[in-house]
Length: 276
Length: 333
Figure 1 (tube, rainbow over the protein chains, first blue to last red):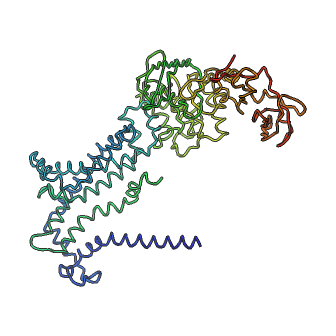
Figure 2: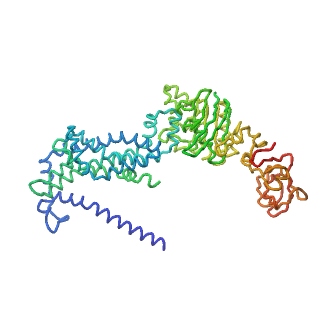
C-alpha cells in the first residue's frame, strides 16, 4: 500500500518535473527551431513545429552581416575577466566573514545582497555619467568593472557558504603549523574550496554572459558583446524572426554548452550547504 | 624544553567569563592533563596557551618569555586536534612536512625529518596516502606526526582520543605515554575522561566552571581530594557522597567514601542495604545497594562475590578512609 503510494508520488513528481522542464526549455527550443525556418515560415499561423523547409541561410546571413567572432571574443573576455577579478576580491572577503565573523557580519552580507535587489535602472543615470566623465563608456575596462561589481555580492555569498563548511580546526592547525594568513589561504583554504570556487566562477560567468542591461547601455560598437549582437537584429528594417533566432542561438550556444558540460558542478554549487 | 606559566589569566566571551584569574605553572618536560566536565573551560585554556584565542587579561609566559600576544606560530607549540584536522587534499607525507615547509626548511632536511617521524609512528607504508584512506588510529598518528616533526617547545593535545573506539583509545594512550618518555617534551593534554587523565598524567589539573579545583599527581587527587567536586569527579565508580545526619555524625556537611572502602558482610555492619544493580567486571564486582535514610551506596568487592538483585547485605565504611567536606565543599583535614 505505502509502496504503491510511494510509487504514485514518484510518478507524479516525475511528470511534474518534466512539465516544468519542458516549459522552461520550450522558448529555447522554439528559438532554435525558428532559426532554421524561412522568414515566412517563422511567422506562419498556425505555427509550424517540425514540418517546415529546414534552411541554414539565416546563419549564413547573420555570419555575413555581422562580426560574430568579435562579439564572441568580447563576451568571453568581459565575462571571464569580470569574474576572475571579482574572485580576487570575493575570496578574501568571504574568508574573513566565514572565519572571523563579527556581530555585524550577517548584516554586511545581507546589505551586500540587498544591492542586487535594487533595479539596475535605478542607478543607470549616475553610472552612465560616471562612466562618461571617466572615459569608460564603450570600453572593456568599464564593462569588466561594472559586471564585476554587480556580481560581487553573489560571489561573496556563494563563497561564504562554501567556506563555512570547511572545518575551522584545519585552518587553526595551519596557523599552529606556522602558516601566515596568505599561505593559509593559498595552501589550505583555496585547494579545499576549489569545487566551490569553480562553481562560483562558472555561475558568475553565465550571469555575466547573459547580462544585457549594462552591456546594452554602456557599450556601442567597439566592445559590444553577444547580447548587443542579438539586439542588433531587432533591426530598424523590421522584424526578422528567423534571423533574430539564428543570432540568439549563436549567442547562447557557447554558454548552454558550458552549462551542460558542467551541470553537476553547478547543481552542487547551488545546493551546497543546503544538504549534507 | 621549556616551562609554561599562566598568571592571573582570564578569558571572557562577551559578558560570559569562561576562565577567571587562573594561575598555573607547568614544568618543563612534564605531562600535565587538564580534566573536567564539558564546558569547564579546559579546551579554552588550551586554546589560550596555543594562541588560538586571545587572553582577556593576565599574562602567559613560555620559557620565561612573555607570549601573551604572540601569534600561534611564533609560540613554538604544536597542537593535536580532536578532529585530527589533517589537510584532506595533501598526502600523509605532505601533511607531516607542512610545518617544516612553512618554516622554510630545505627539501633534503624535510625529507629526512618526515622519514624519521614516519618511522617513530609506524607510518612508512602510508606516506603516499590521503587522510581519507586511513583508519582513525592512523589519522591520529599522522596528526601526532605533524605535531612532533617541528620539535616544539610543548605539545598541546585537545581530546585527541575521543573519536576512537575503546580498544584503540587504550592503545593510543599507551603510545602517547611512550612518546612522552622518548621525546621528553612538555605535553599538555585535555580530556573529559578521568580514566585517561589518571593513567597518562604526571600531574592533573581539575577544572570546574573556569576555575582550578585542584592540581596534583593522580594518586594525590584520588586519595586527598581538596574539594567535593574533585572527590566526585576523580574515581570510577565515583565516590559515595552522603549528607544529612550521616555527615553530621562526623562533623561535616558532606562525607565521602570510595567504593573500595566499603566492606560488605551478610551478617553485620553499619548499614543494612538491599542489593540493586550488580556489575561483574571479572576481577571486581561493583554492588549498588539501597540503604534506607542514606541512599544508594556503591561498594567494590572481589570478583568472586555471589550476590544478586534483592539480596540483603550489610555495608560498613572504613572510617580511616572517610573524606569530610564543609558546607562550601572544601575538604576538612
